[in-house]
Every structure is written in structure tokens, then in C-alpha cells.
Length: 255
Image 1 (cartoon, one colour):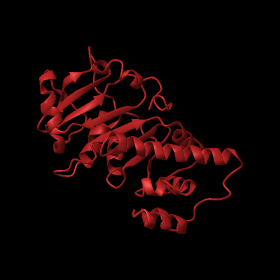
Image 2: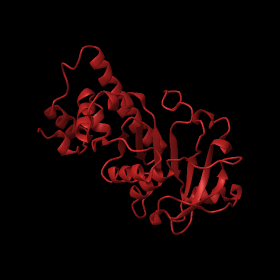
Image 3: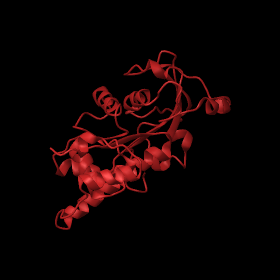
């Protein structure tokens, strides 16, 4: 993320819901700490462990000093508090966007499922630029991305949710993001960046990479004189049938 220019300074954050086998295998490295009250309550995540990047930490430094820049937190059985069991040395804490991550994990965790374990938020510059240059909503944004590059409807047939400006780190933004991901896997925060959920880190990263690349192609086309050709709704439906995906018809339908 940093090498792509998406994570300037301490920008961006990542969380991963650990599997029980991973927790057991690494329990000998864990320590105990004080419980911390969370701004949101997530009873469906009670007792879960999460690997989460640290607040104020630079993502480019994770591989150099992992125990300083990331940590593992454990949620209490009620999903109201967390405690640090590893990392954030010497006196760190999880990302300021923890509320958004946890609410998304709660939405993305079906009973008994191992899917959607990863959530990534990053400052993808082409998407931030689009949110400054254009009046967007979820349909407009998704449709322009689908129509600019044939891969898009295959990778994110459920579309991209657009969330108008909300204060970063706020519970309001966290709740809006979780609501958006009830029906989609990726959302764009106006003037701010993008957040995606996936079954693992590669899946979440791949979603962001595809959406951001398509936004970059769109901006290049505009800079080259404007859009003269684009995929039609019929061509998009052909792509969907060929690759056996089910697109959001409300985005494809003509107004």
C-alpha cells in the first residue's frame, strides 16, 4: 500500500480477524493488559482476536518493527471492551478507525463462517481525486468504473458504495460504513479514501487495487480529451453472464 502511494505518513489501517487455531498457536506470546471501553458494541464479535495496525503508525515501518506498529487485541465476551495482548510497543493503541473496522467485521461475519476476515482502509489517490472532481453517488461511481474497464464488473459485481463526507474516526462514519457493507464489499469515503472487506488480506487488497486502477484510467481518459467510447449496459451484462457473476441490476438499469 505504501509503495503504491496509498499510505502517506500514518495514513491507512488494516485489521484481520484471527482464526482460533492462530490464537492457540500464538497464545504463549500474549500478555494481559487493562480493558479499554470501545465506542461501539459488537456482541457478535465477543471473545474474538484481531490483528490491527496501530494509531499514528506508518505502514511502511511494519516490516521493520512489527511489534511496535501492529498489535493483537482481544474483545471481551460482551463485545464492549478490548485489551491488548500483543504489540503496540511501547505505549501504542489500535487505529483510530477501530470502530469502523469492528462494525464491518460484525456485519461480514456470518455464523460459523470463516469468510471476510480482513478489512483494509487506505488513501487511494485516484478515488480521492474523483470525489473532488465529480458529483458522485453509489450508482454513478460504480457505473463509471464498470464502463471504463472490462474487469471491473467481474471483480466487484456488487458495486461500490459512496459515502458523503463524514468525520474520520467517528462512530457516524463507522455506522454508515457497516451499513454500506451489508450489501457490498467496498466503499469510498468522500475526500478521504476507500475501505474494503475480503476473506483474507489479498482479497481485500485486490478489490481496492481494481477500483483504484479503474478510477485512474477514468481520470486519464478525461485528461486525454474526455470519454468517447465506453462499455454499454448490454456489454456489461454479457461480461457478467460469461464470468458467472450477478451484478447489481439497479446500477445497470437505465434511468
